Length: 151
Image 1 (cartoon, rainbow, N blue to C red):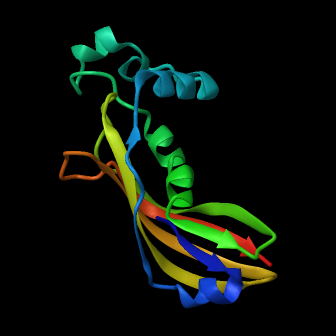
Image 2: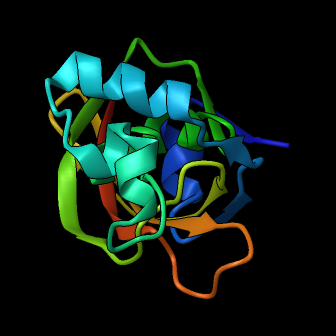
Image 3: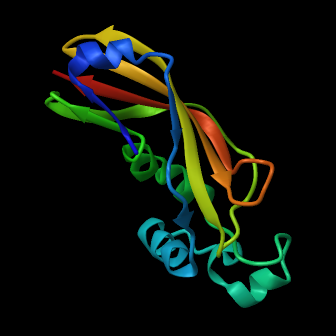
């Protein structure tokens, strides 16, 4: 269940709050192939299951940037903003791809609203995010997502 904040003052008050975990999301070959088509990254470790079976990961893996891009929909399950005019993906800090995400696995995100600071016309939020792989000890991605919310 997402946390809902209404307006910038409630968002400021939520600084430091643990946002919990998103639901699990399936990473299937179709999603990986669509991402490869969208980005022109057709490396065999992602899109050739037969060849990838003999490769370093024992099967195809999701692109690191595919996993990173899923931070947006996973985050939307954790925090709902009401009473603002616009939400902007402002950037990323300290991102690391820790473990490959095998095709056929499931991921979810854990997040904390690490910082909320005032900027012209609104606030900037830094979210500590960890993308977990079901059944694995090491996460897929760790980093900070930076968002701006304008009144």
